Length: 312
Image (cartoon, rainbow, N blue to C red; front, top):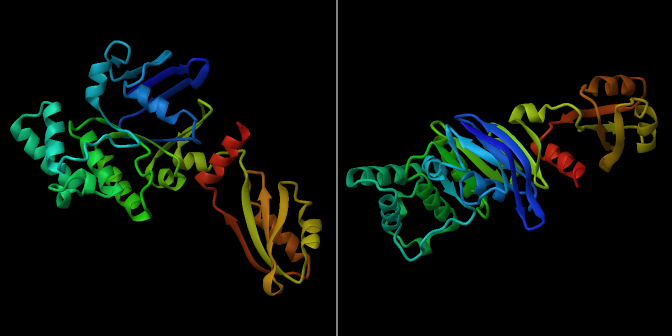
């Protein structure tokens, strides 16, 4: 549905986005992750036609951003990080104003505003001034704005930024409901949000895509590190290191704590294999007492830190 080809953006001599290429299929929820200044917002602004690329192209369906920018904008709804709302207007009046800009007739306008009031959970604030709303309700009104024309593609820049945990969950649930009928691209620096919401992740750092895969496939990707934790009695950190460092794939063993005569250690493993069986066999040869042995699940945060650290 969307084909991004060698997209590049310079600000004078600074390269904010460097040769990005992506293909986004209909119905995907793509999370664009990256540290601050990585190029996420610049990429989204080019995707939505608000910024002109220095080079490269974007095709949406059969339209090119160079030649058919207006047609592409009609297919998209865009919510920037700070929703551009008129704070002195009532929510209902504001959405009516947006519906008129989108050239909805009276019947379409009333039905669409009514539907969005339910979908975005803003019915109870429809007759309140926007300036009196919480940040969470502001984001919901901004989302209703972005969806007024019932776009096929929804682009969200940091949609949960600045929200409390309850508000983030509410926005996440709205995005999930919307995703049943739309293609969604969202940027975020909250990795748990991306992990819970997106079915595909692209990680950008210093203007380049450094990882791009389905969320679960990315978490199972080869070549990364993972951790195994153990709780042991009748031993010391020195003895554990001497015994277990013979397992070549264990690259680091460190003490977490040793309260109540129990030693808790964390082992950094660099392999695709699960090393718990090897560790158990080694412990079995000693007089130690093994109380716990578990593998820390590989998270998006682990992967993000590994990849962005390597590209610093």
